[in-house]
Length: 407
Image (tube, rainbow, N blue to C red; front, top):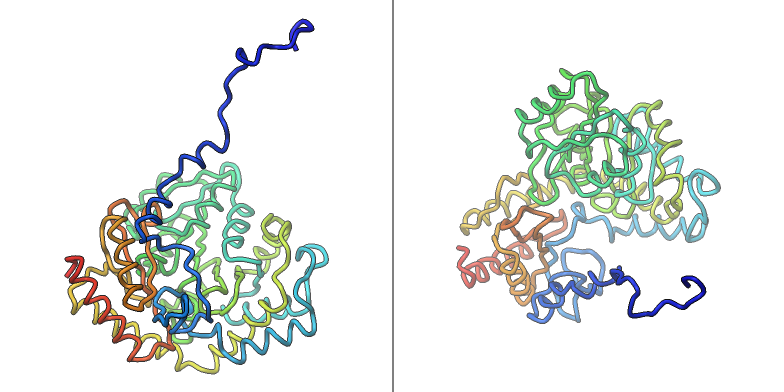
């Protein structure tokens, strides 16, 4: 209304439609139309070395189930028993009504397992990084991260009010430069223990030494290290003999620990502080009983069946050697995450589809998950893969690689 008159609709200010960008997003549908869309594929079975899609048998090399525990009878039975006793959910946050005795027991077990004073469990691994970084780092403080750190670390930095600085991937000279430029400030350095796309390991001894020289604190996201690295599967810090020296160790359950959720482990005062300031903990529903019980059982199995880690590394060495012998470029990987470098995004989509036709389920990583022009097929291996499974995978890659001119 203007002066009592109805405004002429033709004179109204044209406004942008919030949903216009949704209508303009066509790339995924274009890839779907080409028949090479590699996401949201529906699996009809457990995350075992062999899965089923549309009734077809597939060798799974796209799972982070490194120790093969997600379908382990002891893990499943622990989940079932927890549901029988506690029900399916906690109907509230840890902060209020959602802390069960099994949450506390798991935190105590995780603290012992990680050889730290205390641990705190969250509902997802993503929420651990959101909550911990934003709780600890504030105005006039600095978070320093590896350029290839996981997206959850980057988002945790965004939620903090601190300055965020990246250093070149695993480049110790660049880390030294960055910390030198921020002397006199409170600094948290956050690195992945194992980088989830490249499969390489952080140079933790050097990272720690540089942090100590500059008075910075160090947090390691060991989502892909726990259950994989170290003599007893305690992760990257154990691998380098630095468990007592790393300030904060973060882990997730959705890899070797057979469930969903995550935790942070460190000194009691720091964990106590995070418990009272991490918004992703305080304002999220508590981890469900079945998940908590599954993780506890998985830890017991890791400690009682060390041969699983040995088998995982046997399979890893076989596949690294196999891909190299075939002539594939696999980058600096030194873990069960083995990327096959392809180049263009569309080529990676096509290769994943051809592998699927050969009965192999592998993942695609394109920008921004990896640098532009560095698309890859991400494969990862389990302790429970058989020699026959792995031979089938190598033969499929040989066949598809030749078809695409990669080898």
